[in-house]
Amino acid sequence: MELCAAVLGIEVANIIKEQLHIQTDCFRFYTDSQIVLGYITNTSRRFYVYVTNRVNRIRSFSPTTQWAYIATEHNPGDLATRPMDAAQLKDSTWLKGPSLNLLQVDSLQDTYPLTDPLNDKEVHPEVTVQCDKVVVCEAQHQSYDIGSERFSRFSTWESAVRAIAYLKRYLYNRSNSEPKCATELYNAAELYVIKVTQKEAFGDAIRCIQEGNQLHKGHSLLSLSPIIDERGILRVGGRLDKVKGDNDLPYSERHPIIMPKNHYLSRLLVRKFHHQVSHQGRLITEGAIRSGGFWIIGMKRIVRSEISACVTCRKLRGSLGWQRMSDLPDDRIKPSQPFSFVGVDTFGPWRITQRRTRGHTANSNRWALMFTCLVSRVVHLEVIEELSAASFINALRRFIAIRGPVVQFKSDRGTNFIGAVNELNIPANFVENPMTEKYLTDNRMVWLFNPLHASNHGGAWERMIGVARRILDALLLNHKGSLTHEVLTTFLMEVTAIMNARPLVPISTDPERPETLTPSHLIHQETAMWKYRGTQRYWI
Image (tube, rainbow, N blue to C red; front, top):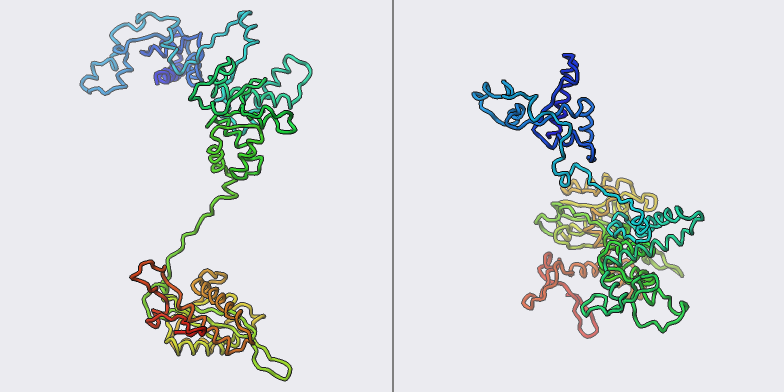
């Protein structure tokens, strides 16, 4: 802020120079910030961009000899930065100026020292370079590690190794005219990355093994019997030294390379083999790592963590989202008598034997019309001879005569009632047929259609049709004779009884509540079930 105030003073001086035609060397600038004076007069240190741009702006207008230091109590500009009573303003230096001659304040200096440059964040740190010939020669033969924390900038194992390979190729090409094989450079870079990682994680174990000492009793690598190969890589020792030749068991599998636990490079290594096996599970990924010649401490946890964070695995095997179901409609929850709100649907057909002639039988189709109560879940089945308005009205009249009047009907209008005109030979507007519409109007009943191609709106009766089909298939399987209209009607009545005896709630394990609520309780106040007397089965 003090430096920005100095820049503002330069801009004001530039305006005064242009308007009053005053020479630049006639200006004098005073500030109570010795840090700003150090920035302006500095010639030995470098600053960061923000300070550098503003110092250059100041120097472009005035030389450093025009700047001087003034104490805070004599600086009139300091009064504008703090509150002051109006009564004190008339006698202040803001209106009268300083009480001493500014030209004699601390006498103008050419330079001012920087204030605490070592701790100033705006000053570049100073780097000392030694050019001694002996030091340079020793540095050429000394090995420096760049540190594994630099590898956190890479997202894959290959990119980290490739970056080291590029550096090695650059250094090699500077001192050799013939290019080196890219594969050799890549392998050398990979070994270097492994060495850097092992030196940081297992430096004490490496020194202990190189000195010929035993690891202490509580060391984490003691159970692995670690060894160091001829290239300086820390490997698992084990008891497989008697195996000779790579044809029996490769050296990398007999003595895999040890990698540290929870290290970033270990995660990159797991990520590499996970991609190689096409994003398979934990077991296959662990097998690929072990076959690749690596022994990662705590591998199972790292592999599990990487697989859970893998975006591709989430796309392939992630759990699907779910849609919250909407609220139940009013006709499903409104208290009413059974079959006040009814869902209607047809299913079939079945091929039946209608009559027998000399040497032949006449066959025809039959369908079933299902009425299910949307509130009590009671089911009623009727057999119809054809999918026509007249056949439907007859079945509807039989249903109402047995179950009582209906307030509202619901059905789909896709494939069951309105669709399939060519195959079923029925009018396109089935329920809107004048005869059907007149019957519904006379009996004060409402018919509601589900939207087109929205069978999920009729799930209440579509589910019941599936149950009825399975029961009927079992009954037809045990039937030996021909299927006639009478037999089919009997079977459908038995299907109705079985479905109405199904539990509506989970079966209780309480011995004091042995009976389970069924649709038959709601319509008959009793439970219908099969009873056996010897080998004979009868329904009660």
